[in-house]
Amino acid sequence: MRAEIVVLPGDGVGPEVTRAATRVLAEVGAHHGHTFAIHPHLIGGAAIDACGEPLPADTLAACRRADAVLLGAVGGPQRANLQATVRPEQGLLALRKELGLYANLRPVKPHPAALDASPIKPHLLVGVDLLVVRELTGGIYFGDKQRSATAASDLCEYSVAEVERVIRRACKLARARRGKVVSVDKANVLETSRLWREVATRVHAEEFADVQLEHQLVDSMAMHLLARPREFDVIVTENMFGDILTDEAALLAGSLGLLPSASLGDGGVGLYEPIHGSAPDIAGRGIANPYAAILSVAMLLRHSLRLEDEAAAVEQAVSRALDAHVFTADLGGTLGTEAVTDAVLAQLQAEG
Ligand code: ATP
Ligand code: MG
Image (cartoon, rainbow, N blue to C red; front, top):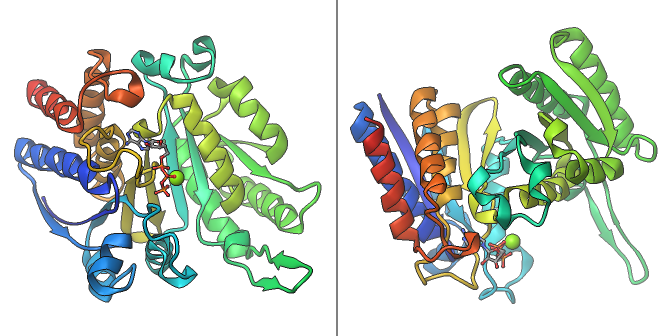
């Protein structure tokens, strides 16, 4: 097949891990007879430096035309004094909104060789394989914000349609996994959460009788996630709860540098990126862990291009490299970004 992939390296370690990811993409293409055309564009701080805005019009237009978008990272401290509308992060928020990417998927499956990198006891981590689905376009992040001299408020709003589509997405994903969904809310306190729970219950009853649905309050979920992570399959929740729970879930995997993500809408283009940020403290040194970016390529192959075998091949190559303790510093190793990528490419070639 032929696919058009927009690549947005962005800031900090973004360009370093993106280069690793595109090398893997090229190898998969060559190996399986696909043509993946790579179209690099600017976003975030790199775009501000070049043209004064975090999401240039030609970047957005290219993303709309693409089959998938692969992103490195945006952010970093060097422009922290800029006004809110020209922060690097605004580029990514705007891109997600413009592309209608409402479901953020973060799989967490600790690798046996990396268990020691997690602060959680290894015996709790064996067999953990969960997927957090975070709603990405609604909730308190986007509601009306007010400020007076003595008070402030943020409006939290969800429509029935917004809840329906993300619950549906989570249930469909669960069908292809172990068939269990936990919907997380704060229905004992928040009206938006009562709506969330009602809609989840109805959509599940009407369309997903084959899937098991359970409700959890976010506070107890925060505890269960660390106390019995093995029991969870798909966890679906609203924007802010998802933001918090996904960082907590990342602890289970040992390093931020291991976790990929996908942001999906209905049809259309998907956006794939490591969950870590621009890591300014290690940027430019060639030591960033590229596994998260490489695993984001696997998600891209699976969700946007429907190339399941190729996606599995990338995951297998990563898994073998980790088995062989091919580690960057965050995992307790000594290898650089390029050496780790070389090892993954060698595993891909060896798979034949
Ligand atoms: P940003 O504002 O872009 O999110 P940040 O300062 O929050 O930047 P993160 O990227 O979120 O930094 O990283 C948090 C910590 O994890 C940093 O110490 C960083 O070096 C480390 N880290 C993040 N990504 C990686 C990676 N790919 N490899 C190794 N270490 C990483
Ligand atoms: Mg960060």
